[in-house]
Structures are given as C-alpha cells and as structure tokens.
Length: 414
Ligand code: ARG
Image (cartoon, rainbow, N blue to C red):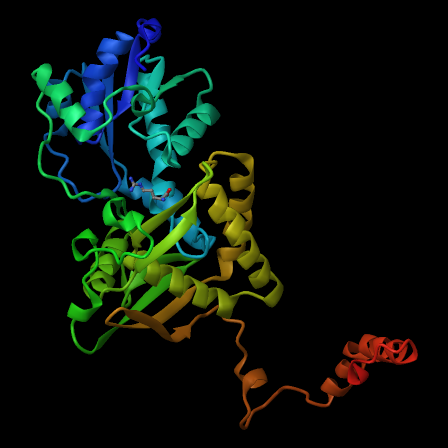
C-alpha cells in the first residue's frame, strides 16, 4: 500500500525508536516513501534495555538526529502515582503499565518535533492494537497540526523476513536475533506478553514467556514480610527506609518477582473492538495497589471510599482508552489528589510463593476508633442509641410489609 503521493508530504518526521526490527526498518522506509528527513526519539521508561549506543545506531540506520532521554522519574511522578492514587486496574486486573507509558512517550515525541521543526511524528504500532490510539489521540490533543504516520499500517512488509530482507537490500544492520515468538512490552511498572501459543485461550503461558517473575513453584521456601509506607496516597518507604519512586518500584519488583507474585493471565476488551489474551507481570504494582487499597479502607470515610472505588474503574478506562490528556482525566485526578490527602501510614504484607496478603496496617490518619470498635473494656459505643436508629432505619420496610399483606404479595405466602 505504499503510496507515491506521500512523497514530500512531510519534510521532517520524528520517529519513535526502540532499536528493534520494526522501528529500525521504519527509518529507511519513511525516508524513501515520504522523502522526509528522520529524527528518532527513544525514551527510557525502565524497560531494562541498555540504551547506550542507541543514538549511534539510529544515525547509522539513516536518521539525521537522534534524541534519547531517561523518563523514569517523570513516568513515576506524573503517571504511575496518579494511577496508584486512583487504584486504576483495567477490567479489575491490568495495572496499565503500557497504557500509562504511551501518553508520556507521545508527549515527548511532540516536544521533540517542535524542537526540530518537524511536521509529523511516526510510531511503530500495528493497526489492530490500543497503542496506535494512545499515540495518535495524545498527539491530536497536544499538537493538532502535526501529522502522524504509522508505517506498520501502510507498508507491505508483512513478515519479519520481509523486514529483514528490506533492510538487507539497503545495507542496513538490523537485529536478526532469533527472537521469542512473543510480543513483549516492558517498563518499570510491568510487562505484557502476547502472541505465540498464548493466542489459544486454553493454553497455559509457556515457561519462557515470563520476564519479571519466577515460577511460584521455584520460589524460595517460607515467606518474607515487607512494610510499604505511604504519604498522601504515594508510596515513600520500604521497611521504614525512605526512597524515591523509581528505586522503590524496582525493589518491590525484585522482591515480589522472586516469589512469583504478580502474574496475571486475562482476556481483555481492546478499544478497537476485539478481545485479546494478555499475560502480564506486575510484581511491584501488585504489592503497591494492595497496600494502597488497604489504607483506603482504613483512612477514608465510607462515602468517599465507595465513590473512589466507583471512579477508579472510570479512571482505568480513561487511561486504557488513550485519553490521558483529556479534561475528564484531569478532573478526576483533582478528585483523587484531594481524596488521597488522608491516605498515610504503613501496610505490612506477607509474601510467599505466588501469594501476597496484608497482615497489618497503621496510620496517623486512620479513622479506625479502638473505643468504638472494641468488644472488650473501654467500649465507647452507645448501644442504647441503636434502638432508635433501627426504629427509623427499618420504618420503610414496615410500611412495605403492611401494604404487601393487604395486596396479597406477602413473601411468606408465596
Ligand atoms: N494490552 C495491553 C494494552 O493495550 C498491553 C499491550 C502491550 N503491547 C505489546 N506489544 N505487547 O495496554
């Protein structure tokens, strides 16, 4: 589907670049088919790949300039923590690591496009996934005048072999390692693994698919305890030791990963209308969400707790759907920031093979009142007040009962 009329459509294109096969082939392809100058952009979200040498590699592949930056701190502060404060888990399970990374990468692509005076950006997403949506909607929301090119939706290079041949014919070096047959997207907040045998819903994910977690069967024997400390809804310490977000998430990934905690195997609804089988690993995210929810239970009044649980689903959908930079996400974030002011304290979690459970919680802003809760000495709860409370609380049901009896709809007689 290469379209000769695209030639000259854009002068300069900023291309999202990972150094992998697709984005490497994109450089010569965009130059030939669009006749454009190419600038690459690579952001480090903690994907665990060595990015030294990536600039040189991009330049060797035909880019005229290559930008690389470390986005980890920013990823945590501006995207991961707001998602934690909202308890955002898509369809109840997926902690959204990929979905949270895309708006940040797209924003940087747009900024780099401005710096270099480019008139378009390009990404290596397929036409079938959610990521194209996230890149393109972000770009539209931040820079509606910029063009967007998605070579994978246009070119005729349908297999890996086609891509390798294309590069080879142009004397361009591409990674021709025998890759695993999976599509893997990893960053600090988790990992997604799809394709290969896992396209069959009944097939258990093969052992070599997992990247961040040990098989629970091979986990250390016994268990270990970890204390996660929070301030205003944000994790700030492990076992009483204060640490920055990147370091804290890494440490929890390592700990939970060693015990095989945080494996998720789910079938999810994509934005583009199909269901897909996704296998995720989110060791640190699992512990952090678990601890945060526990403090919500302790520190929030009942009405706020319930509202937060309801809005948390909406927030997760917004992230998943790629509309991070829309007004509703900003408005909901304002609510979650406010509601998280009183979420402080520590949660103790016991971690053992494939399992994590909360065993304790303490908070200076706890709403748990010992005097009101106790069934022993020191009870401050006025049990006589329950009589009047029940009289009114049940009043409506007395009325319902008498009307039902009169109209022959008494449940006792049906
Ligand atoms: N299904 C997830 C999402 O849409 C993960 C996508 C991960 N991408 C990948 N190439 N494996 O956010």
